[in-house]
Length: 185
Image 1 (cartoon, rainbow, N blue to C red):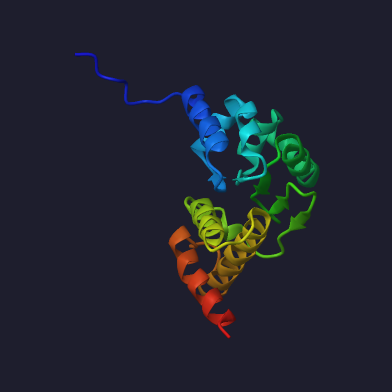
Image 2 (image 1 turned 60 degrees about the horizontal axis):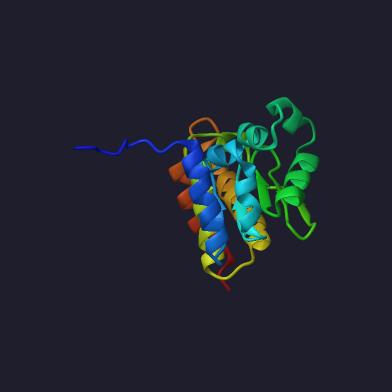
């Protein structure tokens, strides 16, 4: 009996993502392993046509743009802008002062957040938040900007309460709930 191998290669994942981008009319949020697969073949982004949000940290952005992490960090704005323009995607480059480069030429620097948020799972919370905002009807650029702002503000609230040292990703969920509640009119 010929059993398929349980591991799917980055090349196969990139091809699958290319089909997804080409065949769906819905926005797509790509993070983590999807970014690593796309770094193998960024041409798979061609079918996205302005419907994709990529949420890389500096190391992932370096792989996508074929640069070193140091080069990404030297000019985060220019790297995000160039990749967004070349591939017609929204780039949310995570890190100190998260950067959003929109396919329509807009740029944003997020003023919220703190170093305590550099913890496992924090980016997953951000990706989920952006996807939820997209599902509520925001444009990709607006979802990226709002998601980064809310995520950072939640982290800032949790830092005030618990300090940065012990901040974990699940703390951000409580912080997001508080942010939403404080905005309730």
